[in-house]
Amino acid sequence: TAPAVVTGAAPNDEPIQPCVEIKHTQLLINGNFVDAASGKTFSTLDPRTGEAIARVAEGDAEDINRAVAAARRAFDEGPWPRMSAYERCRVLLRFADLIESHAEEIAALETWDSGKPLEQAAGAEVPMVARFVRYYAGWADKIHGLVVPADGPHHAQVLHEPIGVAGQIIPWNFPLLMFAWKVAPALACGNTVVLKTAEQTPLSALYVASLLHEAGVPEGVLNVISGFGPTAGAALCSHMDVDKLAFTGSTGTGKIILELAARSNLKPVTLELGGKSPFVVMDDADVDQAVELAHHAVFFNQGQCCCAGSRTFVHERVYDEFVEKSKARALNRVVGDPFRKGVEQGPQIDGEQFKKILQYVKSGVDTGATLVAGGERVGDRGFYVHPTDEMKIAQEEIFGPVQTILKFRGVEEVMRRANATPYGLAAGVFTRSLDVANTMARALRAGTVWINCYDVFDAAIPFGGFKMSGVGREKGPYGLRNYLQTKSVVTPIRDAAW
Ligand code: ADP
Image 1 (tube, rainbow, N blue to C red):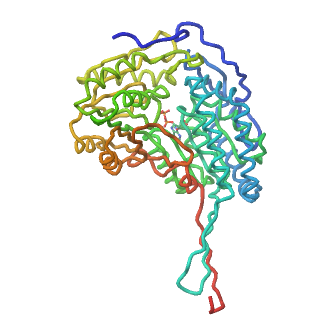
Image 2 (spheres, helix red, strand yellow):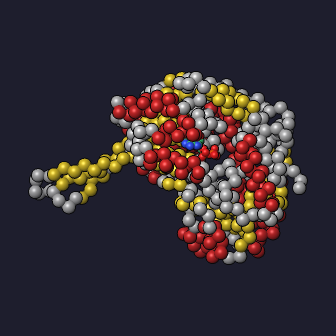
Image 3 (cartoon, rainbow, N blue to C red):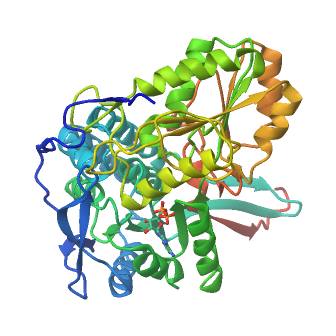
C-alpha cells in the first residue's frame, strides 16, 4: 500500500531541537526538589529517537514513605485543609494563571517527553489543564453539607470533609491532563497528595508542580514522585497512611492496584481504565463527517487514548464508501516530527508499545482481516507507525493508530455487538434519527455516549467507565465525591418544640 504522508523530520532527518530548558528532574517532597533516597536515576526517552532526554530521580518505597509523611503532616497539621476554602480557591486560580503564562514551555516539555504533536499540546491540552484547574478552584468554596430531617428530636447534619492523603497514579498518554484531573479536585476539597507519574513521562508534572508552589500552595500539600509502577507505584498503593487512591491506566494494572489497596488498609479506589469503544455509523449519517470524526476518534494522540473509538461499526449500505474514504483519510494523515507545524501524528510513546501495535496488525491479517492501509513502521528511527485501517473483529485494546471497520445490518444487531466487550468507557453514534440516537444512548453500556460528535471533553461533564473500564467518575461535581468523606453529626434537641 502507498505510504501515509510523512513530513520532513520524520524520522530520519535530525529531530527539531525543542526550545525549552529542563529545570526539574528530582523528586518533589515537602516543597523541595530532592534526590531519591537510593541516589538512583533513570532515563526519560525522546520517542522520536529512543534516546535519553534527561536522567530523572528514581523514587522507590523509601521516597514514597517520605512523601506520604510530608503529605500526612500537611494534612493533619494544616494549614491546607483548615485554611478558608476561598484561600484554596485563590491558590488554584493563581496556579491556572501561571500555567497559562508558561504555556509554551509546558507544551514543549510535554511534546518532547511524550511525542504528541506540539500543536495539540499547546492548542488544546495546556488550555484544558488551566480550564480544569479553574473549574475545581470554583468548587473549593461551594462544597457544603446538608441538614437532614431526622425522625426524632435530633438535629442531624452531614459534613463533607476532605478524605486525607490521596495517592494518585497517572499514565503517559496525557501526562498533564491526567495531572489536572487528579490533582485539581483533590486540592480543591482540602486534601494533600502524593502523585506518581508514569516512568515514560515524568517531566511536565514536575514543572507544573513547581508552578503550584509559586502560586502559594503550602509545602507537603503536593508531592510528586517519578519512578516505576511495581516499586514506587506499588508502595503508594500499599501504604497504610494513604487514605485514598486514584488511578488511570490499563485494566490489568487497575486490578493490581485494587488488590494492593484491599490487602493494606482498604483505602477507597477510583479507577479509569482501558476501553474498546464502539463508534457506530448508521446508513442515514453524513458519511464524510462520520469518516472524519471516526478517524479522529481512533487516531487522535497516536491512537493512545483510553476512550479511542477503536471499533468502527458501519451500516452495510454505506460500508464500502466509508472504507474507501477512511482509507484515503488514513493515507493522508501527516506523520512526522511532533514539533513540526501541520503534523497530525508523532511517534508512539516507546519501543514496547510500538512493537505491540505492529504485532496486533499482523495478528489481524493472520486471522483473516483485510489490511487496507498502512500498518508498517515509518522510517528506521524512533517509534513512528503508518496509520492503519483494518477489518477485524477485535476485542483487545491496541492503544495505537489502528482502525478496525466492521459491517452491520441493523440497530438491534449493532447494539448487541457494541456491548459485547468487557469494557464500557465510551461510545459514538452517528445518525440523523433522533429515535435511533436515543435508543442507542440508553442501550449502550458505556460511561459516555457521544452522538454525532466524539472526544468532547469538558471540565463539567463526568467521565468514567462501566464494566472493566473503571470504578467511579472524574470531572464535574461527581469528581468531588472521590475526595470527600461524609460525616453525620447528630445532636439531641432538648426543646420539644423542634
Ligand atoms: P502501560 O502498561 O500502558 O504503561 P500501566 O497501567 O501499567 O500502563 O501504567 C499506568 C501507571 O501505572 C504508570 O504510572 C505505571 O508506573 C503505574 N503502574 C504500573 N504497574 C503498577 C503497579 N504494579 N503498582 C502501581 N502502579 C503501577
